[in-house]
Amino acid sequence: VISFFGLWSDLAYSGETSEAVAAYRAALDLHDDNVRALRELATVHEKAGEWLLASDCWSRLADLVEGSAQASHLMRAGRSAARAEHYDLAVELYGRVERDEQLVKTIESVIRKLVKSMRDDFEAEEVDEAARKARVVLQIDPEREAAQSVLHKVASSYVRQLREAITADDVTRQEAISCKMLVAAPGRTLGLKTLARLYRKSNRYRDSIPIYERLTEIEPNESSHWIKLARSCRAVRMYDRGVPAALRALEMKPADPTTFSLLSDMLNRQAAN
Image 1 (cartoon, rainbow, N blue to C red):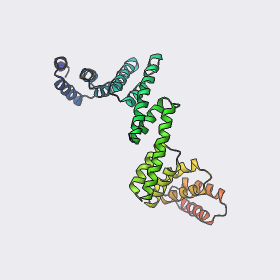
Image 2: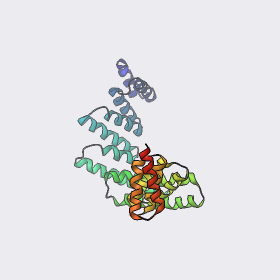
Image 3: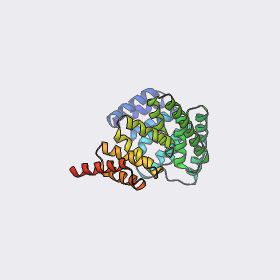
Image 4: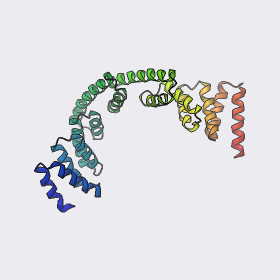
């Protein structure tokens, strides 16, 4: 492979970009950690204005090296991503580099462009994409009000969509929107309660357990969450988690015979095992 690098470089510089790209990619199919092939392919993509492809090559290169070389490759990957107007990717790549004063300014400039793109997506009703970009911004700058505001609007949009899906009895859409809400608005209980109900009705008890656990964190004084958590745990024989949940429910409602029966049943089963 090494003996052909000169030929491939000549192809690239003579304008035979597609042939050079094909040759470099063939070399990488044989050895995907070939640093020289990745570096020269990245340069070819840059010269052709294929910025996203160039960014991918520089990012892969960064994973193969350390220290200042890694930082240099990440910077080039970030610049290429920004030129491709993939500002979210650029921010993520720059975020992997130790920041100096100049990089802070660069990141701020890219974030401003990303915020604009995020707002444009939301106005165009590309809600999922707006939410994704908002999360990227908040990873770098948790206090950025614009991203917080968009994420709040996205959450409200999901709530509206979820209520429509519930009214239409569209189970598939209910689950899809609720899962999005877990990411965009993890504190909104409507999505959690919807998922818990769907999983319980379809006997997906194991899937329901982390949902009920999250609900007990948000609403710890709601005994029904603890009871339903205990029942789901019993259904999959996870008594080590079900028994404490039932005990917690009994603390809130000591005289409840149903919960007492649930606890007794799990303790008996646990002892039998």
